[in-house]
Length: 446
Image 1 (cartoon, one colour):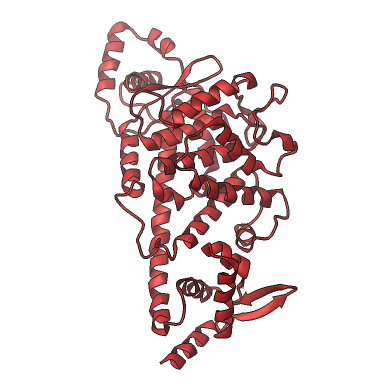
Image 2 (cartoon, one colour):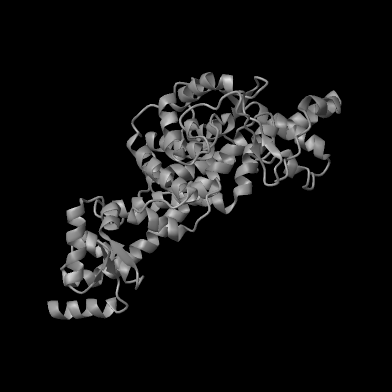
């Protein structure tokens, strides 16, 4: 993508106006509407300027209005200039929606995420995040094939599938770490997990890049869009990042969502590893959100949203770097991504709730199946010809092998599924007439 045009420096703009004109612009800055979008110069210069202002005066007005609200964090660029952020009204509104949707005030319906169905929903969300996060980093495979690999437990066939399986296992592990403080060792372990058996140099997993390993971030056409800090600074920079992640710094309150978003940016900006930085950054974002009490983040996929508009994702990094290290661009962009992910979760839950109620009404009348079998039947009636294995059923519901085997054999004995052998493995197929079979069971049970 094309690198955004660097905004004109404020000092240069101030030299272009008289003291009287600057006073007028400063007054205008104080009266500017608070709900305005957080525009970068590269976009603003293409829009019609307000009446009576040139584009450069308009930009100066905006920079003056933003100045007092910016707060520094311990992240700095190569010249030592700190990154800063603010929470303008557009961000406050977004954070409020996130708090309502993911902070516990509005929960996921109990009939969907209850102990009986929780593993099914978790598996679906973790699979989606594992696949799309890997695809953002270049993994090439279809969602259907990748989901089949994870659900059946088969070994990955190539590096793309290995990346996805690594992500899936890492996301499972992250859920268990939500009460743990972030340390460099934990970050290294996350990186080891996401890059296991995928790097050209296997020794690069779980360690900082070395000074002789020159790393740059390239754009779509090979242009350099980011040069990370030098390798010798990385231990100190990661220690500062962990302090920020653990709420040690800064002294003042930082909204938990903003903290998670900045942590995401921080790891990606420092790019401490030879490869796998994006996947590690997004994993740490999930760790941060879960640690700070946003439990519905077990069920959403931000990478699913980011993959729909990858240029916007990259642009939010570049806007920050090209405009005085203003993290607000990234905060606003990622807050919007989170809201969209929560909306997709809500839509998904509404659909699944309707499906569950419809199928449950039929299955309840039979009173023949446990909750795992009922959930499988609800899914199976929509996918005649689909195959299930004991390993897949075991992974999906978090039960032991014998329990999964008993579930599926019982369904086969009742005629709901067809049992076949593939070598030594038992395979259970959904028959094309599963609806009629369930109706016959209902008649037999009457």
